[in-house]
Image (cartoon, rainbow, N blue to C red; front, top):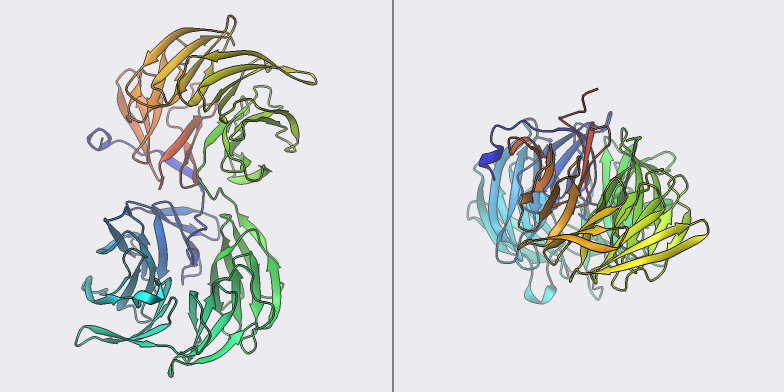
Length: 587
């Protein structure tokens, strides 16, 4: 696979929509005050605040789990998750060169947290639950200095870490201050005394004078620890605790605290009695707070994969970025105009403008998953397939529910397509049945059920004359159906789980792709996603003409707009990428 793409031109990436809001403190502002830094799948993204221009740091082999930025801004550190028993990599990036400075391997399965020393000499890494160790690294030599189990066996695993000069502070069931003995290559812990108060710490922040540590807890309160004595100094708020726990804390120059909770409340609270001074409600739990400059402006990331910008003065939230917070299941481009495209994920459908990566409309069906969607050719409706066995038809301008077909498939609707005359819908289900529905002025009618597949229908494509369709299934078969007589015309069988199928533009060939990572038959040109790469192939030569390198997760769907100018790809990490198509139609 690598040989066939060596020396091949790269696709031009025009825009990326995506942000992993599940990584705690994953959203950062670089000390240059000009760039946001955040994870998406296996990549770390640098986004210029002024104009939104994005750059990508590629090097991780699995999803990024934590990010830290050195005080000087010279380095970025990122850790990842990996499969059980395999080592999880820590990468130190040279910010100026946008290159890998060092790759550090000692932790297993997951890197939980990272922290730089204020002088940029040391990096401390904390392993996840299956690793449980803390390691101190010398950045200049790129070697581990010392390591130790992060917490006592009875205390649970540590969730966060901060490095202050040569003192480490770890948060878990038991709070520990560690002193670094560099000459002897040792780290020695001291337990913090919190009396009868027992808490699990999720986040840690240190005061400007290095005298106190503020610890946000899963119980919804904040503990103030004296760093010198290791004793509990204060705890609050006493009455109105933060719902679903304190996820993240940041300290302003004034000493007051910015606090983000698991319920989505973002507050400014007093450093003395933890009284709320300002408050705003955001969508889903707050996971990141990034302060820009002296604290007049800050950026907030949430579990809903949304970014907000707020100012200290008015404390009003401005939504600056939205994206899916789970795998994108399908993408569809509006026929003819090529100006709009739609994507679907767990419980929503989103409509986007193709030139500006901006969300225009969101259609939400709580607690349901949309598996597939399509625009009807006239542009008047979006048809969608849902795991509750229903087909839902929405108006693309307002999101209004125009039609719902109940009990369309007993094991969920998994694939859907509409005919060009906009009078029929063809759907596929988890049980392997293909059904044809007639749309009527005030309802619908089931025309036929076709049963030959033995497993889930993953893709449906309809021929331009509306007389045939082809279905791809996990049973290893692609079947061409007659939509006039409702009978199978031809079957293609292979040793794979077919994921997608489409017609050649002249409709005399089929192009299929499946779990064997092969593209069978040919189209001129055709496209595939493989090893997180988008590949464009030439039909006559059977060779790759362009590759797209930017996805951090497995690619789930690819579509080309009808004017052959834009290619849109989606992936399992929730990312949506827009590429300039390298073979535009000759006009």
